[in-house]
Image 1 (cartoon, rainbow, N blue to C red):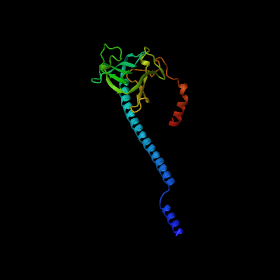
Image 2: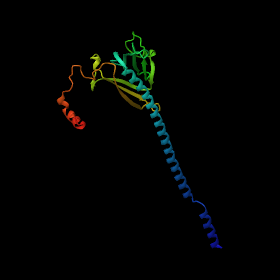
Image 3: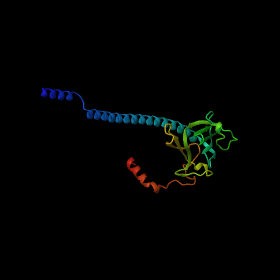
Image 4: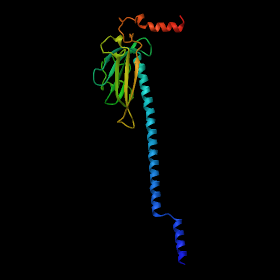
Length: 227
């Protein structure tokens, strides 16, 4: 009778879980859930980050394409900012008739984080600031900073210098990330001017490079062409 009771107790113990096994299982399940949750959160954050990247890239591309088109067509600059928020007032061929010229302007208003484009600008306006934003159209918002660098070839071009030495304008645009306002993304483009009769940054008195300076190139060309 005593041996039968022991056998029955051992059989009942083998059918269930001990308290230690149950706790270990719960801990393991919690760890797996935490790892899965962290992975899911990371995947969602990565998806959101990439989505905003695409949004910013499209937004900046649209703005830079319009800025490039505007500046590429300018044929005179009437005013540029000397301090404060950057702006440029310029003349370009009238898109409606391709004969007369009209005044245009670009202006970054840091207070509203907005870049404005002015078309058919009033001749009485000689500077662009927060008081003139009502005359402009919003080109792009959510802008942290905006700058224009005027170049004479590979060197800076100074306002007031020979206009025909101005060969290109570097446009720098910094956008605020919508989901993280403390983070910004930088975008830029180089606009080569085509209606300014520019000399490519070189003075008109500069002589072409002498034959001796590129005689190696001529020799190679002659050998490859068989002449």
